[in-house]
Length: 183
Image 1: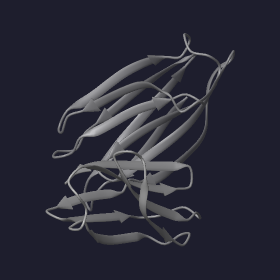
Image 2 (image 1 turned 135 degrees about the horizontal axis):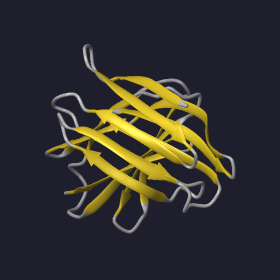
Image 3 (image 1 turned 45 degrees about the vertical axis):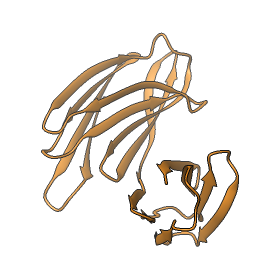
Image 4 (image 1 turned 180 degrees about the vertical axis):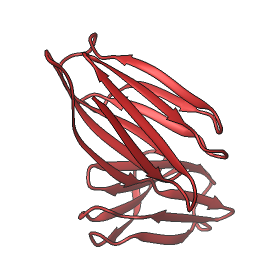
């Protein structure tokens, strides 16, 4: 079985993804548009990464991934380009591999400039967005919320924070995105 999906990554660029099912193996063929890197990852049902690769800008990519050594269950194949993430859910069982679901999600932008932190995220889910700032010991010192279906954009002033390591985390649905930064 073959799947072809076009990922919108810009006004004129597209990414072709063609996965070919063959028993308990899948064939991935990705072509990368110029000026962009692509991350490819596979997670098991415990959300543990079992495969990871990065495709350089302008490069092509072809891999065969054999699931026969993994347990039967649900896996997520993720391809990420710029701020667009394409998720495919696949079921591995005694009969082989079946693709059961696919969906787009977006990855937030975390941009630190001097004493300011800019956070942008396009929320395509019917879930709240929560943004937290934590110190290096995991103590929360700020939390922000956004209603379901609305995008989030804010600039945070970091000037009053003492020197150290911090984390900004964005939660949307079951996704968590983290960014570590130093002041």
